[in-house]
Amino acid sequence: MDDAENNAKLFQETCMDIDETKVAEIDGNEHYAAEDILTDDPSVNTLLYNVNEVPPAAIVFSTAMQNILLGLGGALTTAYVISDVICAAPDHPIRAKLFCTSLFMTGICTTLQPLVGIRLSVFQGVCSTFLIPLMAMKTDSRWQCDNVFQKGTGSNIHNMTGKGNSSLPEAAEEEMYFKLREMMGCLIYASLVEVIVGLTGLVGILLRFIGPLTISVVVSLIGLTLFKIPMIYVRTHWGLSALCILLTIVFMLYLDRVGIPCPKFCAAMKHKRNRIPIFQMFPILLGILITWLVCGILTATSVLPDDPDQLSYRARTDIRDGIIHASPWFYIPYPGQFGTPLFNSTIFVGFLSAVISSIMESIGDYYATAFVSRAPPPPHHAVNRGILLEGLGSVISGVLGAGHATTSSTSHVSLIGISKIASRSCMVSSGVLCIVMSLVGKFGAVLSTMPDPAIGGAMFVTFGILGAVGIFSLRSVNLTSSRNLAIFGLSLYAGIVVPEWVERYPEAIDLGNPTSDGIVKGILGTPMFLGGFVAAILDNTVRGTLDERGFHSRKHNQGDKFFVVSKSETYDLPFIGTVIRTFPCLQKLPFIQSLKHE
Image (tube, rainbow, N blue to C red; front, top):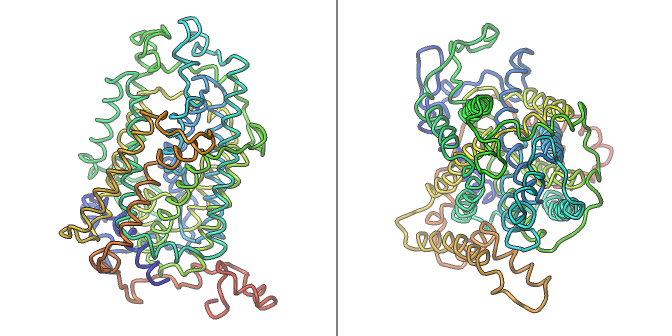
């Protein structure tokens, strides 16, 4: 398991290196580079509130809202993608229901993870790795929506997308729910694998064979192969999409040092900050809101066409008004709300690859969160418990029909390093607020009316940064080695070319059995699974030293003075000591602490 911790730390360090060029404002006019903020020097890396402290109510609320707003875009865009994959009409109420369900599960998992999971301030957001298999489904003719939206006459298209009209032909409506039910069942079965990994403590064994090279290939392919999704939304109006992209870039890269005056409640904070770097915290959110406002103005002034046959019609802000009227004020997701879960072997293979990738990402996030929170590295029982809880949350997501799993959010790890607030109470409050917001059906309906150019622009930036995360993972690998260059290049190229070949020539795979054809297409058509598999095989069979492969480089050896909390008070489950004394056999479970660590 020591190798597992080292590997996870390597992934942690690369995630934090993304923000090295950022500059945070501390103590008024004093500026420290992020690489200085996240150092081993306790005098520099000072927290305002550690994991176990409870800040004032105003700070708890503001921090919780910040966490929610940062993760809101992922929940919304994923709900949009799932709706499009199942061929839902642009103004169908199922879009709002899927978003509310995603937000509800985000809240449930975010509330439980800091309490009974890893017990760090970890935000549980939508798992972006599931977007890859969702898009791979489009290679199957049954999952193509051309026959619904593009092959009909102009009047038919108008009926599908007209204001306030969410009707679909009865056959198309049944097919839409049938597809979603297949996704539900496959998500449940795939997530059970993550549950088993957490229950049995297989994390350490898994990471012995998955080094930085494999992680780099997997994460890079997640971002690099998602380019087709923003193209769908950006093409509706390139000008407005470019506006969203440019605004986000300006906020994120040029105005990151600009702060706004801090509210009065900041005076209650232990470490006063005169200004808040709002552009650094919410660049994507601000870009979306401004683009949304511009689209609203162009809609009100009739600059954008009102003809559904024109592509730029999708940039209007009123084409989905019917969702708001059709959605109830209060909506509670419940099991089987979309029907009984079904099974599809092709979808299962894709979802299983996404689950495996999310496990690797989550472990790296756990160690990164512990580092920025100045907490000791998480023990094995805490990591197993965190993975177990993520798996259980994903199973519940499948039962409710969310269509995707939940996993730890890497972007929220950087947010702790910026805000200096690692309080567990703030993250639990974020989860509770997510649940409350998800139960207000009108809220989800309003957000589901976001114009396509704003969504496409946000995806353009987000997926680009996601691809860069994988490239940065190579910092711990010896890139002067021809061995490593060959493994990375061949694996990355295989993950890009082979899935594209499957999409363009699906008829080339003909084994004489539709089920077998679907399984093979699912494996070869999922870039991250194929590329990661090739990288893992080559990295473990081609001769190379551990240092060359990046397994033992850049270790962080913090002293006791660096940690502001103890391992037991941070990671041990509360009130479990009495139970263990009564039933000592429970200590054998890999996700329960032993008495000697209590």
